[in-house]
Image (cartoon, one colour):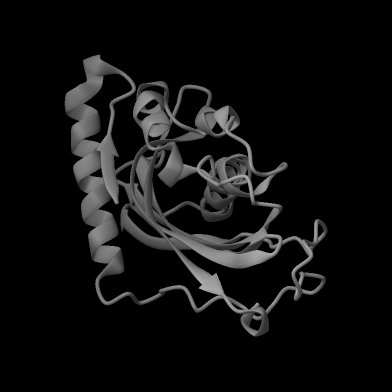
Length: 219
C-alpha cells in the first residue's frame, strides 16, 4: 500500500495540502462502517475461458460508478451526472491503459500516466507494479476484467467542486495458459483534482494489490 501526494503546482502547495487533508477526511468519513462496500466478484463472465486455453474475447465489463458522499454545498441540478461522467472518463482511461486494454504482458504502460498530474507522474512510475500490470510475467496470455467499481466522494466548499476521492475496487483474472489463473484485486483510494483544461487528474493514491490462484471451477 502506498500513500502519495505531489502538488502539481509548488506555488500553491498550501492550498493543495489543505485540499488533500479535506479529501482524505472525506474519504475516511465516507468509508466509516463501509456503507457501500463492493460485493464479491460476480459469477464467470459469459464467453470467458473455463479451461486452460486463453479466451481473447470476453463480454466487456462496464464500470459501476456513482457519487458517494458529498461534503460541502449541495450539487446543482445536473452537476452530479456531469461530474460522474467526466471523472469516469479519466478513471476508465487509466484503468484500461494500466490494467486491461491491449496485449499482455508488456512493460510499456506509459499511456497510464497521462491521467496523473505532472507532479505525480515520477512517483507513480516508481510504483508501476502496483499501479499497473507492468509486472506481469511472460506466461500471461490475457487479462479479463471481472469488476470495476468506483464511488466518488466529493469535496464542495464552493462551486465548482474542489476535489474528490475515488474509492475503487477492481477485480481481474490473469490467464497464464497451462499455469493456474491468478485473480487480482486492486482496491483503495485515488485522489483527483481538476487541471486547467477542466479534466480530472490523479494526484495521490492509497491502494493495495493482492492476487490468488483460481481453480477452474471457480472462474
